[in-house]
Image (tube, rainbow, N blue to C red; front, side):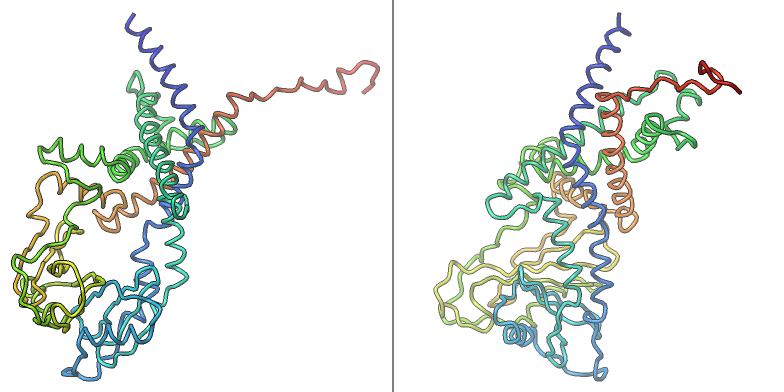
Amino acid sequence: MMIRNLDRLRKVLFWVHLVAGVAAGLVIALMSLTGVAIAFEAQVLEWAERDARHVQAPAPDAARLSVDELVARVRAARPEAQPSGVTVYPGPDAAVLVSLGREGLAYVNPYTGEVREGGARGWRSFFGFMENLHRWLAAQGDGRAVGRAITGAGNAAFLFLAVSGLYLWWPRKWTRRAMRPSLWFRRGLKGKARDWNWHNVIGFWSLPVLIVLTASGMVISYKWASDLVFTVTGNPPPATQGPPGQSAVKLPTPPPPGTERLGLDALFAEASKGTPAWKSVSLRLGGGQRPGEPQGARASPAPEALTFTVREQGAWPLFASTQVSLNPFTGEQVKQEGYADYNSGRKLRTWLRFLHTGEALGWLGQLAAAVASLGGVFLVWTGFALAWRRFFPRRHAAPRPSARAEPGTTA
């Protein structure tokens, strides 16, 4: 009786697996293909912009322009764009990166103030388009909500297909003969036998990574899934979706009217002071009061701390960073928070964010994510082929009689 019930369950699950794969296959294939395309985005951009990222220092003790002056040079060179962030690197030959929102970015020579384009516009346009396809099917405006809902559903379907595929694949007897067709490709197969072999082999080797990619994608796509991460770790979920810790930090006491903000050089130096082996310090620029401008010169909301993101050489986890919030008028530290300060829910949520791209494990993790995503494309293709043959079986033509068997013929 139990075996019969298991057979019924397997049969029902098989048909649900097949229908779900056919219904969501195109979306899954698109998300898998774009996942492959953006797997090594950071490395490709670093290579493409290698010339713009580095400058020739005039002398070992050459004077550098202030960060405020470098931002001003970018504003003058690109008046149509609004600087949205600044990133400083420690090397004497490193240019300063100024982000320009959707307009792109610019590298600035810290000694001469020369403004350089990023040098990889084509690559950035390509990756931007791939990311838009991956996240919301390249929809624009209000259509992005619909596109995000479709990709979220496709990701959920892919997770179901991975788990149900594992159950359907699970052999009743763990013997070499039973396992061999699922462990490697067999030569000489054609048609259904070939597609079945490929579907099983690719699914077997891709399954662990695909489950991680799709499960982490669920956390990114749905707030209830993100909240579940905090709930199961015994921590209260954040009020908003996505990684917490991005909210503004208010100053404990507002400065007196007329107080000028410190220059960005002093603030960057203060932010990096606690991390001797820092490899980058970044600051998001808002549209409020600028450094050097007196408090109250423009109507603005309650003053907030400036939060710098400091990344350290050899940090673990690889994605770890420290957020240092400073009083822009005094340079005093208002708040500092790093990975070690996160609760268990936020740590797990952050791991899932970077496991989704493979970046949590460096280039090896990215390679695993890319190969598994490519496997997802082939799983869709072989799944469609198997479904087509099931719903539209090929009619085999009657064998043509040979010349000897035909009546009225002679040898």
